[in-house]
Length: 312
Image 1 (cartoon, rainbow, N blue to C red):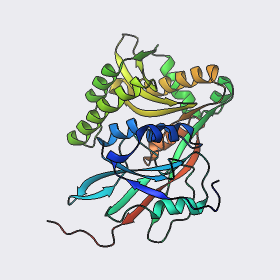
Image 2 (image 1 turned 135 degrees about the horizontal axis):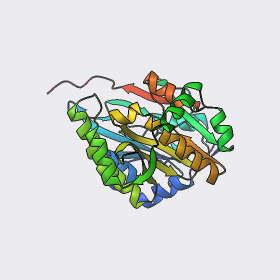
Image 3 (image 1 turned 180 degrees about the vertical axis):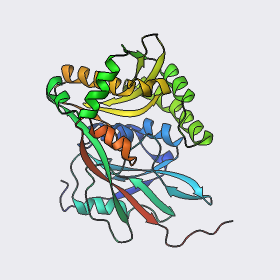
């Protein structure tokens, strides 16, 4: 910990951030996550993020913003970046984490962002913390032991999948995005088009940094029926985005895909982690838990402006 010596926390607009020092801090951070690299933030925010920096980049906090609140800046959580918050080379005290939060400029009319699991502190006055769940599967045992922790329902689904003679392959990003686009979610066209636009920006960036890959399931007849993109950093493998066709859902292709990757990781890496990313959708959370994944808590940080801006 940095102890009782007070060090300055600076606010920096995007154009004044030293991205080399920033990324060095993330690489060395004890709580590093890939979402916090400068290039990742640029991709998911379209370069719209500012920052708080402790001393000479000993700790950092990204402040992604948009202007959807009547044109006023508000801090929000970008798509495809589950956890942000404060990242530091050494563990910070609760008081130091609170100091970071209190240094967020009042020019942001609203704050609604998600912290990382290591940002544990009581909310300062005027702020609110809300508990959220992530699901983590430690792959530090043999595959047989890991599979022994699967739920009965998952084991049944894998048995059903085996009857369809599915094939597992890597696919390139372009094909993953085409499949993703062909199987939209129920939220609507505008929502899905925004996700696809972000995926184009983000996945090629991830590929250029050698931090991810697409995995797919094909039917016996050679048809692509399910795919997901895995973001990998150090020993952490993140289930970033996924899609299944109607046929893929019927043939249990996604359980088949995840089980296959878990087996590969368990056999190759001794301390690998599979990060399902949490979900507030009960059925998805149940699906993640069915692999024996354990709940890991993190918090969203919220604050309303001192007074609401008036519509222009």
